[in-house]
Amino acid sequence: MDLKRIEHLLIVVESGSFSRAASVIGMAQPALGRQIQALEQECGVPLLYRHGRGVALTPEGERFVEGIRPILRQVQALSGSLQKERAQPRGDVIVGMTPTMLELFGLGLVQRVRRSYPDVKLNIVSGYSGYIHEWLVDGRLDIALLHDAQRSKHIAVDFLASAGLHLVSAPSAPAPGKRRQHHIDMAQLDGIALVLPTRRHGLRRTLESAAAQARIRLRVDYEMDTLELMKDLVLTGVAHTVLALPAIHRELRHGTLTARRLRRPAVETRVMVATAFNRAYTQAMRVVQAEITLAIAAAVEESPVALDIRLASAA
Image 1: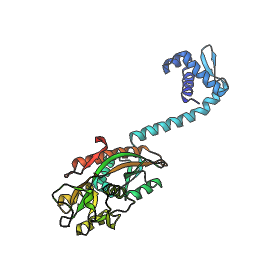
Image 2: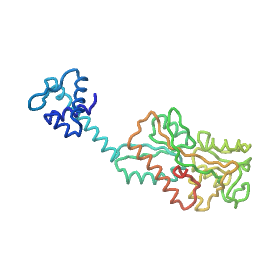
Image 3: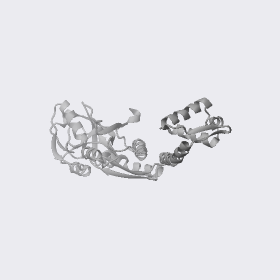
Image 4: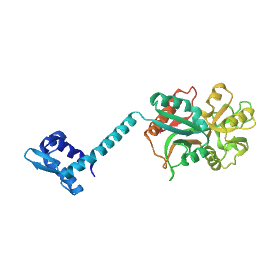
């Protein structure tokens, strides 16, 4: 049943005539008459009768209006509540992100959301892409930042940024190529000791695909799904790793680690914002996703070192 027709009926009743109601609504009187006639056909009974002074409700019309008014008030209240929520979103939003992204702009995201949307309670959890993907599909996350994820029957994805991958070494550790070079060929990774995340992480799969293109086999001496432990092992000089620069920006500033961009082929990881189809997409989630885009852009712009990140807005 068309709510607009019901509203028009009530205005006719309150106005006492079709002509006055048509003026209030801003509709031609014949068109208004057709609206009421269509409503009466839906109800199967006449709702109005005409008399010398205008129109009045029939007994059936009185029962109809008596029953419909509370429903209309509920609809109007719900509409007002939704409009208020749109203007001032509220609710819990759980975001999962990899340690690299957390390092880059996790704090900034929390501060932005708190400042702009005080009624949104943001919770950030960290893990590698494989785990985050599972948590998202299982309904434990609202929004996820994943590396090299693709749309599927379970999740929708939007490109957020791409980050170049670099060979990361301790300054004193033996390493292939010349230290002063800013790049290193994938082929030069052949045979060197590496510490890498497990294959659950999108970065590992991306790197192995590039190694196959370069016709080399990666020597993975250590598998770690903990970023800090990976960096600690590299600092000891027993192995190298491959990371995006945001994961080591503090170490680069202090000179405790060095980084060289991988090339031939050039290797990068694509960071995607993902949501699950089995979870309602709320207004609070919508504004948090928008703040994610703004937070990473601000972090890249404000970084004291170049991070080799290409944002979606610049794609």
